[in-house]
Image (cartoon, one colour):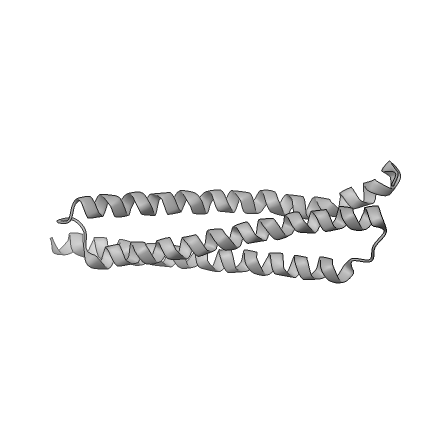
Length: 140
């Protein structure tokens, strides 16, 4: 394989590389939120007078959602990396790979969509927890 043959493969592989970078930033955001949930849970457990069972339950549900979102985001990055390897392997061995590329790309996007839906679920639950805190502040 010459450099002239490799350039089109590099051009095609740019898309998945950019996807890896973008999903990496999403994963950073998700792991930061996950860390905040853990910190908040530990704080609430340490101060039982402040914590409510409903708030702790919401924090646990959020942690589970984010854990699943992080797993799906990581799967999306993994599939994008495999897609890049498939591009280069196919170019090196002159293989027809359209079905494999389509399957990997669709799986990668489905994992990303799942991660984003779970991430949105975390946001909705955080608003529910905030409403509980506001309601408690209004009563007390």
